[in-house]
Image (cartoon, rainbow, N blue to C red; front, side, top):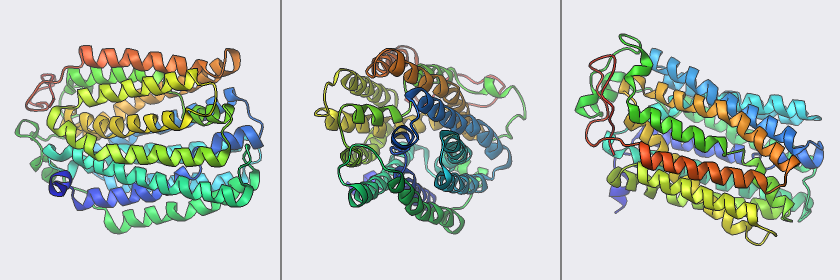
Amino acid sequence: MRQRMLGGITRNVVMLGVVSLLTDVSSEMLTYLIPLFLANVLAASPAVIGLIEGLAESTASLFRLVSGWLSDRFERRRLLVGAGYASSVAGKALFLAATAWPIVLVARLGDRFGKGIRTAPRDALIADSTPSEARGRAFGFHRALDTSGAVVGVAIAALVVQLLQGDVLRLGSETFRTLVLIALVPGAAAVLVIWLGVRDVPRAKAAATAPIADRDVRTPGSSGRTWRRFPAAFWLFVVASALFTLGNSSDAFLALRSQDLGMPVRDLLLVIVGFNVANALVATPAGALSDRVGRRGPIAVAWAIYAAAYLGFAVAGSAAPVVFLWLLYGAYYGISDAVGRALVADLAPLELRATGYGILSAVIGVLLLPASLIAGMLWDAVDPSAPFWFGAACAAGATVVLVGFVRPSRGSITTTKGPAPTPGAVP
């Protein structure tokens, strides 16, 4: 059983998993406390928090397109991955000087710039390092380590909050800055692991692990327009993901909603530990399952779970159901992330794999800013429950588009014999 679950997991996948684990220990100490720091300490409004989070996440997604193209063009994925993780560490350090929300914005932009630079080449490097029949398993394994780091990071944050301020409802300034100092240590360690343990995979070697129909490797842009070399199923998945993203505002609003319902900071962090445990537990099995039954069904289930969780946050009248809703949200995350990244690897031509991740991320990035702005305005102008009604509706619509129109074919992923490949992908 263990051999079936971990078959095809290579050294690079393990090392990149360790890097993500350390980075998430660092990042997740702060992620859910940043909106509380903005609201409780710097007195920022939900609209301002939505602006900061939207700009930060859009920056991350848009830079994935650039880094993905560079990664495919020059085959230097490891260099971009290392630069991205180092930039995130530098961005976090700026939180120590944050006395007003514009400084938090700059720090978030620096952190998310790093995420944008590293993510597409990292995902492409995982795909390059893995046999095609084990992609879902590899991405699930990576997601599980990533999320295990989040569990540790949030648990450390909860312990620090307990030691420094107990079960106080609002976050204190000194508590946040202490956590920033602690978070810099595992962030720097992640950069060291990249330098010591991760290696680029030559394109010829990556092609050897691809299906036969996907082994005609060319230099990106060598003939035909790049966008025409992606199958129709890829573009339809991009459309469905765009609709989903419009309602997928920053998780900052989940943290604010939990506090609005009466949950103290310490308890919120403990609940988020449970969220990350649920995420980690389902990621690898979901990825492995998608290797056998196809990607579309698990992603549709994940989006439906998201809609149900957001409906729960919309109708909740107290903190009592918040624990269950965060666990449900964790299940969505674990399934969607692992299987979604594997689906992109399936749909994109081998020589444009990182570009495919970049395209999807860029489209999502364009919509993350309005998504968080809409959520902030709905919170301020209508009701704190309004962003969650809107998010659930968008997720339901995206699920309909995914199930009704994204129809990847069985067999080979795509052929690159001409400028306009035949649409198709593994199921």
